[in-house]
Length: 321
Image (cartoon, rainbow, N blue to C red):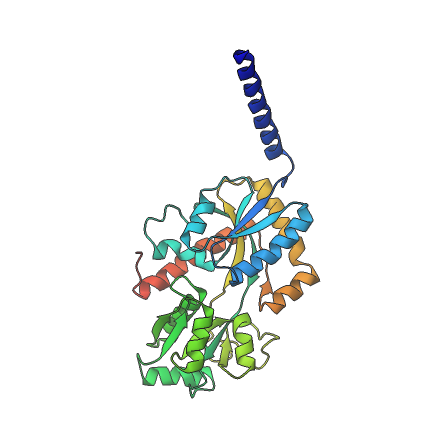
């Protein structure tokens, strides 16, 4: 009797395994898809990822969830996930400098990931404290050169877009301004409004209400053309820095080894969503610009940015810790 009970249990287990394998081999996706966000809830990456997840879920008829796992741990968890398309990551271009800032993280931001598609570019606007006498970028740069080492710029930390954009400004303009890191965006704006800090390369969507209320001043925006939300703010080129280049992009990636047909499907479906007027309006309210790319284009961008920003960090004297 015990023998036949054991046989029955084994047959049941085999049936479950077969069913699971069948589900895995069915048309993608046929189960819940998880998008990991390696930033806190409410961050730009989180908001963009959730908006996209809602649309993908409706399109696929499957649950698509966003799971916040702030920090390197979140990125590592995706790198070590099964490459089956059911674990993705919503990330920013800060992904490209992980190895330039950290030693022995257990994964490689290039080799361990496969690009799926860009989803947005979020313009950064150069803002200054209301106490700063400069009314344009040239006046600010002149002030910085006249008093080297006395002015500062804020960021949300070394891996943040604020920091990279600020460091590129510093190196391109050849000015000596100090870096002051904060825990997040609210602290940066509080510091600027108090006059404790002088400058920030801030996400436009976050900075817009403070600019409109006159609590901070916008001197230039890091975009090729002026933006609708800030029509009177010149581009960096118009403001006198045509060599300044920085694009804060956001994208969806998958673990390396994810089957190309699955990546192709996700890429094409993201492309369809990004073409919709509804998403264009949603991105506009967030101060973002809808973007798409091929997987190969995103992979090339990750490699290029990793090389460029690695050199910028090296020039800034920052080494992996």
